[in-house]
Length: 299
Image 1 (cartoon, rainbow, N blue to C red):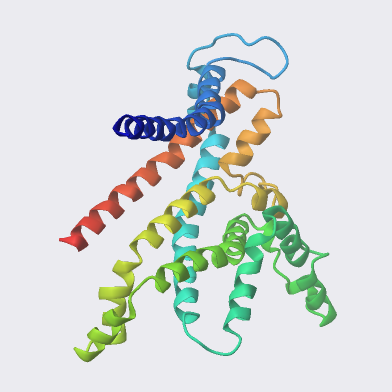
Image 2: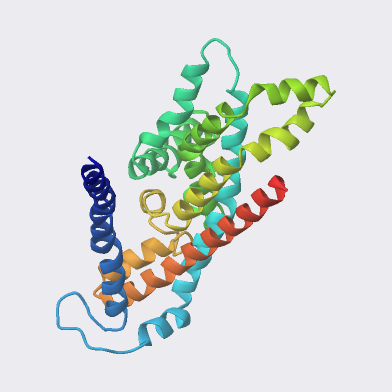
């Protein structure tokens, strides 16, 4: 009987180890191999058709000497610096406001969340038809009341176009951010609030000392996903402005896309690797800061 138990324990142990194999194979196939392939491609002058020639680090040197590429990086970083705080402030505010019982609360949550399930490409085209000059819905209203000449071409103004993309992005994804914060709020024990109320804590003190610290995991998830999504913004830019006017709103993802389909696949691969680092660095810093903050709270 003892031998049978040993055999069964041995089978269970190896079965658990064997369950890791599919995950490892998927990681190698869809993550590791593409990265290694991109690294190799970035060191060539491949145009997508002819045989590639090894050119060393010339693609990376070209990137840092290209003013348009630097502009695309600046646009993406600027977009992320404004979008991440905006999404989290609005998402947390919605979650707190809707974390109470009143008639129609579920309907309001659904209305806030619905834009998140729509394709960003479609969302961008919808807003383009609303905002575009001469043919947009808002322009039609201005024209109807005889104020057409006073209409501001939001998407054609280099200084305003990026802010429009940021607002549309927040409109679309605030529901997703809200949902994660709402799930975090549901996990906070209500007796903490009741005890603090007995001790005379105000609503602001409860938020500062209970709600915000207990939402730590939700904040980490939202900040990291928003950083990744913001730095990789592509669909909304394509549909709303096409990267224009000029290159005023061209993101790094759109720049890579255009280089790749412009016969510079090797160069596009090198920019993709730079973008990978550009996304990875703030994510690692965020994780580090959040970990320190959590340890500080536990102390």
